[in-house]
Length: 134
Length: 167
Image (tube, rainbow over all chains, first blue to last red):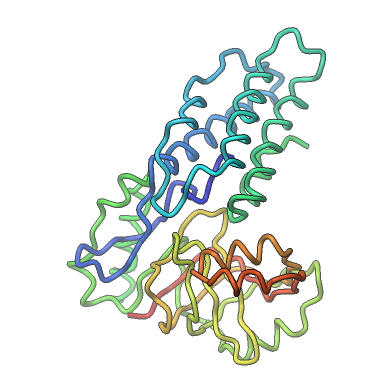
């Protein structure tokens, strides 16, 4: 879910010519969102590996329901279903009453991202897999 | 030396562009007339790039599970028309499916027919039906063409950390 077909990591490290010689992809609001939540989970992974339990649910996560996609993409029923599942799985990371280890709850959220991308856009999956805590 | 300095200048522009929004504001038109290559992704050089014939020989000998570091020159056959997040390179008897390391950069969507130098790792990938169909959609294939994809396929694959586009 982190890096939809609407995004890339920090977007291309490339020069853009003003004369429009190159037809380059312009990132959408969803692309920026995906990059932002990737960074959030990267920090969360570091915290968990350091023995810290994440404490505050990142409200930015909720923007998945409103962020604009690129024109060539649409909110498919699959994407909508996974969006809700993703928000729930992230919220579960912060559930103090859960008996499941936080590492497993965190990995479950990442796996939701991967499952969604397997249907929507496979390109970012190798990068998302790096968020898994082994 | 001049070429090196120009590539270095563009590289510094890249590094300065920390996020995507800012990145889109970078211009290079003042340099475009003079540089020989546009660099996408990590800064790489054209030095020691092998021919497509050499790359083809490497690919035909790769076993599933191997990853072989490689830098070579090839012609672009096709680019993802959604984002430029993959491209196919001409290998004569087949194509090489190129993706970009960590989904960290894309290439222009209008470079089919152009020559590029790519540096990264070569491998063989068994691509499932869903993924093949997704890439076909990205390439604006017709519904009929997409429906004809019904079996997994072993693909010559390459993950590029940097791309030089000859200008």
